Length: 334
Figure 1: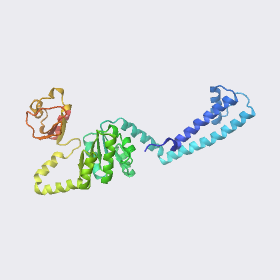
Figure 2 (figure 1 turned 45 degrees about the horizontal axis):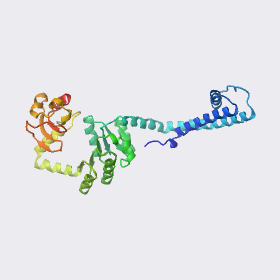
Figure 3 (figure 1 turned 60 degrees about the vertical axis):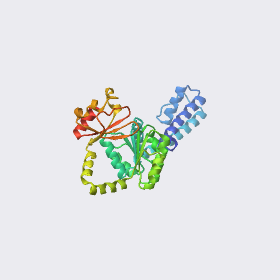
Figure 4 (figure 1 turned 120 degrees about the vertical axis):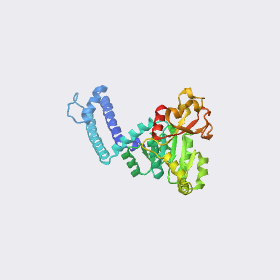
C-alpha cells in the first residue's frame, strides 16, 4: 500500500523542520531587516544551537522571537529523533524503501504476467513462468506468504487483488496476462471484472472451483477458466483407461530447469523471409530437429499435424515438438 504523506511520521518531521526554518527566516527578515541569506544563516545557527554570535545586538522583540525559535526547534528535533528511531526499530523504514524499489521494478515491466494468489495453483503457475524466464508479479494478501516470496526473490505486492489500486500497483495497465488463482470463485470473478475495466487487452486465466462459476467467469471476460479438481479427476481416470498415452503426454509437458518438450512459436517472430511461405520452406526439422505438430491461425482455428504446404501467415502460431536440446536450439534460432 502507498504510504500517505500526512500519515508518515518521517514526512511530518520533514514538513515541521522546513516550516521552522521558513518561519525563522521570514521572522528575521521582518524583525531585523536581514537579507534572505543572513536571515537563513541566523535561523540555522539558532535552531541547531551551535553557539555562534548574532550578526548585531538583538532588540527585546528579536530576543523573544529567538527564544521561541529555540524552544520550538528543540521540540521538533526531539520528535524527529523519536520518529526516526521508531522507523529503524520497527523496520518500517526498510519496508518503505523496499516498497519504492518494487515500484520502480514494476514501472519498468511491460507485457508481464500478474499472478493473483500464492496458494497451490499460484505456486505451480510461478514455477512454470520462472522455468520459461517470463516476467511476473505476484499479488498476495497474506503477509507471511509475501515474506516467503521476498526470501525467494520473487517480485510481489502485498495487498488485496480485488482492489483496483492493488492491481494498478502491480502494473495491470501494461500487463499482457493475469492469472487469478484465489480460493474464492467470487473473488476471482471480481478480479476478472476489474481487469476488463483497467486493461481490456490483458488476457485473463481464472481458476474456478464450481462448474456454475465457469460460464460466469467467461461472460465476465476470462479468456480461459481452469477447474483444477475436474482436471485432476479426469487425469486420474485417464491413467486407468489410456495409461501409456497419458504417460507419454506427461513426459512431453514436464518442465525441466529451463524448458519442456513442447514450444509455441509466433510466426511474427520468425525472420521476415518466411512470412507467407510454407512449412516446407521453413524446414524446421532440418534446422533444429523439431517437428511442427500444430498450427493456430489468426482466428484461433487449430490444425493438428498440418501439411507441409500450410502457409505461415501473419499472427499465426506453430506448436512444435522436440527433445530438450532441440527446443533449446529452436529458441536460439528463433
